[in-house]
Image (cartoon, rainbow, N blue to C red):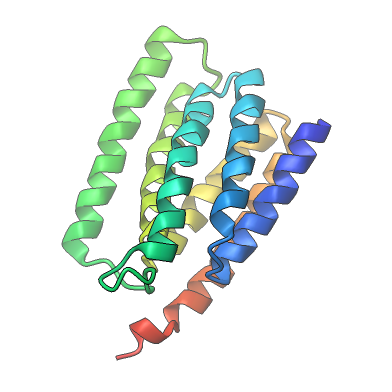
Length: 187
């Protein structure tokens, strides 16, 4: 465990807590966190996770814009539900991306866990996309992904990061509870 990992983890807790509370400051704080984690994952040869953090950086900017200026009235998005067709399409995209990335990492790198890491990357991108659009289903996907991440990080001896993702899992459960009762979902 390094000081950098500790700082990144602290920022992660703050960012996810702010997300649960629908505070748009979750995005710039999250941006700093993902940039730090891109370096941490590079150092332990979790290249798909490193790539994920770089992509997250762009999604952090997208999410910040969506939450502050997106939506029909350009006043920021409200929490909504995904339709089944959109959800199935997005999950299929996540699966295809996972397989392609896993094959690339297994073939061309010395990645520690190329297939698992790629699957977590693919589905994390779907969850992050849904979160940026304030889709309540993002939390269910985050719960599933975060539980698996905990095991991966324990395996890679990133114990603080494993603890962080365990906390992320609990925060995702809270996010699911709070977003399910969001005013926009009550009709």
